[in-house]
Length: 455
Image (cartoon, rainbow, N blue to C red; front, side):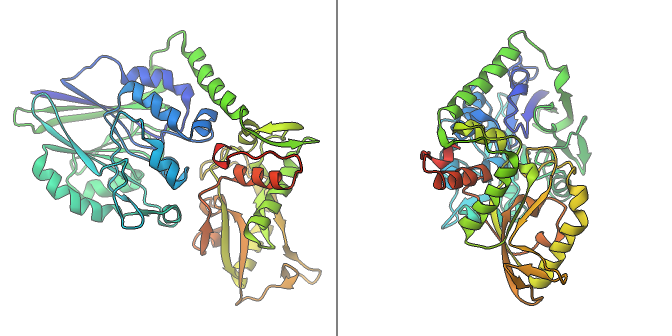
């Protein structure tokens, strides 16, 4: 008999406050004949100053220290950085990145920093095939010159060959629980380790012979899978558990380690000067500047955003990347959406209907790192005295098309149905805080230039 233990993390999102305990669990003494360590993506998130300042390279360094056996990527790695930055994120990684469904354009080439799968061989000779897949956001990945591939055709191509070569197949899935369950019903996969939807499976889930496992988000759980195999390398038992964070060992130096990580990032962010302000910029003034930046960068007369995006004032004097990160920490990008006049009327009706409740509406996810939605801020559109909807001074015609400058966040939240499927162009090469900083730099005589990627 042979035992294999898999220790796994997912959706850490740069929550380094969890890292001392999580990394200690990953490096704890082996309890099986063979132990593997996997991360299932969204390990990094640029809301943390160290991740932002190093464009994720620091996260890779910390992961190197625990010697992961393989990782896959999530949308924070794939969509949170420019094409070039992602191409160099793993330059110094000491672990393989497994990713079968994202190709480089043009030509649909395999990224140089990833491979579709890898077969590991245990000391007992068991061959373990591991595949990596991530959520294939077509609209957004293509705007960054990546070509995402649908999951099932990829598995249809890979699995027969891997099944012929390996004794068991493990899928690192940054696809979400609904997709994991669907794949378990349709494919011969021994273990699917999940992520993306931040779900916790306390004791795993067995579906059609496939063991599903997942460990929540932010390090609030870690995952452990124990496999028992017979002498013919066949699995005879498989058990999963998600271990709560508060059950992980604490050491006296943990708090100091967490603070040191944050302080290192904050110091790097402070070293990048952005713009000098004679007076403090309030959150209300930042909201108006956001509207101006959206209008100016798109050359459109109409823009909207929300006040909850701006978390604190920008101080008087020379501001730094740290100030902008603390005020606007979100992974949110500029977007131009195209609507017909009738759809624009529907959107404005949603604004009128929901504005009061949105002011204090709590928002989670979709790139947002604040607390509440806040007030809708709109420029260039409204109703005239007769009640007609007016776009840039002209009454809206139902059959005509109109463009609005806004943010991709509003496409992903559940508040504005008309935006869900409307044609849109998203600028994934720049975060909102970078756009805002560039606007302030352009319109302040005393502005200093900084590399936008460092904001």
